[in-house]
Image 1: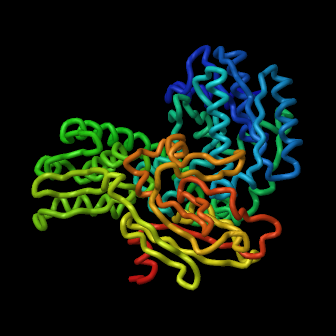
Image 2: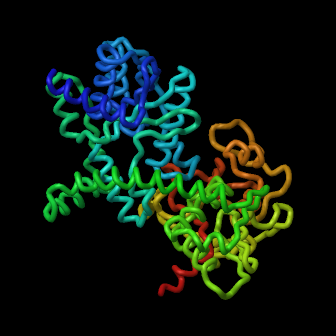
Image 3: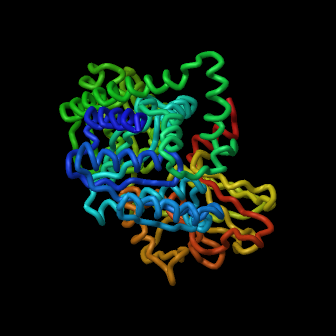
Length: 484
């Protein structure tokens, strides 16, 4: 019980520091059945009984990946029953969702898991969802982002608290290492499951945990603690810098529908660190999709604004955004209005690459034998979709959207309007024209890149070869063809 008390005190200290909860809050606790989440449930239960009145709901997701998933779900159900807590279960067929969404297995699982947890919080009118990410997870996250070239916001790692769809996602364990959580479970006799996939180094995070960090510990035995300290320091400083950028935004930027304007002289007077943040903030406000806002693009805007000549230029920022310098005025705006973008292209073998100049994209096609095909996930850097090449009717047509377009998606009896899908996905109308539609030779829309694929030509057990489509920015495609 001594270790339980120590961990309870540590969690309460972190909760008070970061405002994770208040008395009488309702909290949905995400419990996978592993030692981390089992410890989280029991520590929060101890706090709710003896330290602060909290209402807890135990929530578990069965992703359908492994045969033992059903047994693990029942174990978590029994645990919730012993503690007298409500139990909520979601069951998903992630392998099927991978085919439908075009995401990798981990991405599809994460998306459905968070959707279920947030929906559960809404049903119970809960303030927050508690997640069991711990100090070791944080160290791995910071290192992975460092390798990826993240800026300060990425190196801050996972946040103690962030809001998504009016629900707070809280992480009370970010200062507690995994060995302490496993030790608690063993001392208290708390049953937990071991996921064998955690030892598979094909997954990038597992490789970082099992190979890279142990190698770095040969140079610094305290490397995990160093990464954790880095995240703590940067997180506080990043929040300060974000607030400063927001202040300059309110002072310097003129906001109009679909357009943000600032004067060059005012921009050049602020520190370079805040110049970059201000550009990124403007682009984030202008577009819901900030995934393409990498450092080179932001730096190109900053340097183009600071230089004396040329005084007139235009930069395609991707995601339907454009930045223009008009002498001493800098304008960020959506690109051409939807009605001005109209195009049609044909794609087939043996010419498997087309440039869609109207939207600055390149679409490529490749055919792979089934045994040589590896499912590529969201880390691949491209928008991808794969089809059974024997089922997909070529040639393909790549075109702009037309009124009344529909697509047949998995899980629906019938078709759904493309317009309704865009509304459901909260894609701004100013960006929809920049999304091409890929159709087969029968006229069926088979893929909306980055949004949805159709039910046509799904890859299955009997697929002999796979047709892989990828869409990427024209600049990146040119770099791949002509490496420096």
